[in-house]
Structures are given as structure tokens and as C-alpha cells.
Image (cartoon, rainbow, N blue to C red; front, side):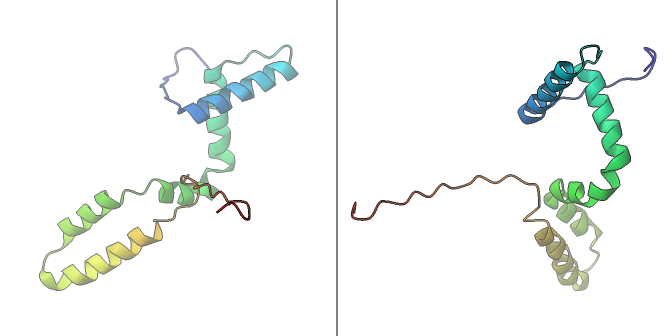
Length: 120
């Protein structure tokens, strides 16, 4: 990378930051003569992901970041008459419902504890 190249800043969440630091630690532990910074590794990972995986996972990313409120607002703006209203809303709600249980989305897990027999 040249110093004149346009750059940008990225803010990582805690999980991504932790993963990045673990990768750096692993790389530096394995390669005594590596010269790598967090920025260089992040750039390498993003470029590599774009080349190898982005197109395959694009639909999942779109589902994970789908803005249902914005989508519905846009649908409502495009409705011209009451005849179109019901059909447009049914179509829009069908799309919103397809994105409800998105893969990759973390949900809080409920822990269920069982009582030992006879402890009631």
C-alpha cells in the first residue's frame, strides 16, 4: 500500500476487535519476522473476503441488515390508489416476514434449569 492511497476508518464492535487481536497474536507468534499492523490485517481480511466469499454470502448480508420499516415506508409512498393498497401491503409484509428469522442473528438464549427430583 502506498502512503498516498485514500484510507478510511472502521469502528469494530467488541467481538470483531477481539477476533482481530487474536489473529494478530497468532500471526506474530507463528511468524517471527512478520510486519503487520491491525489496519493492514483488517484490509487484507476485507479484500480476501470480497474476492473469495462476498458474492456467496451477499444474500445473507442483505437479510441480516434488511430495514423493514424503511422498506414499508417506501412501499407506502409508491401506492397510488386504495385498490393497490391491500395488494401492495400483502406483498410487502410477505417480504418482511421472510426476513424475520434471519440466519446469523444472535438471539438471547434462555437458560432452563431443571430441579432435581423430589426438590419441589
